[in-house]
Length: 381
Image (cartoon, rainbow, N blue to C red; front, side, top):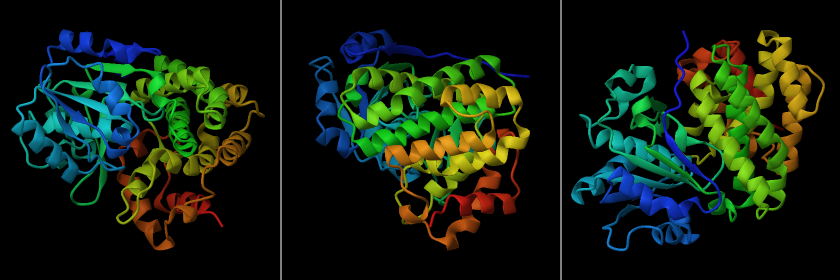
């Protein structure tokens, strides 16, 4: 049985930010909490968003979103939401700000104090009701697609990096303006772009049945594969930025089908204490090894379709090599070692991967020993 839902409102194109005031009126949102980060404020992106809000609208702000959002940050933002009597949330930024906004929207209307009971692996999805506070998502990167997804990933107080997920968490509006990504640095363009590629590729490889999701995944993969290098080399390439934002959105529209071992590994790796690891970059490093590992479980038809997009021979080995080549060309770090991960963390990563929700939908489920081999393969010299 496949559950297939695409239920959010999307405004997409250059200049979409100019529709913000009218869209807020449609939603009836009058006292929003802005969830963003210091980088967005410093880059002047928040000022561009603010210029399109009603002049008399009371604005409350939480701009302390960490690179990997935490339950502690959720509590801080939630306190502002309640103190200022907000009636909705506008998330401005990458996946971290949007995921944090979802956590705040959930806990503003549901019993607390902990997010843990709402985590997917804890059976939390049925507990998330339509009462979630309304969210407007304004992405400033092209990677996570959280603006249209039903989930968010949060580091819990116990250190576990877990997903919360429900159709009730999908933002009421995704305002996607590629103009906001033109100033994104090349290394972030690369990491977030590989996140979009990972979403599309893993969705397509997943053993779950959802033909519409697979069609969206292939189209998104083609857009991202053809335009990522261009966006990295020239951040002002408007065509490349448009296609990367669309590919990012498509990746999240389709990954309700299920992801796989790439994300099973990147989630616990991203939750390692003492490190600030970029999720999309981790996906890029794990992807070649996982594609090779998945090879025996993939149909020749799936391999051929991916190979046609990537311009390579129709084999899992060739696909993995193509991804490694892309990583090198766009400046992804050489391995986990280069990102500060040490070998004594391998066991914890493998244990986390086995219980991650994405482990269940990978086409070939690794054992702990196989996960350890995948981690070693991504470690680098």
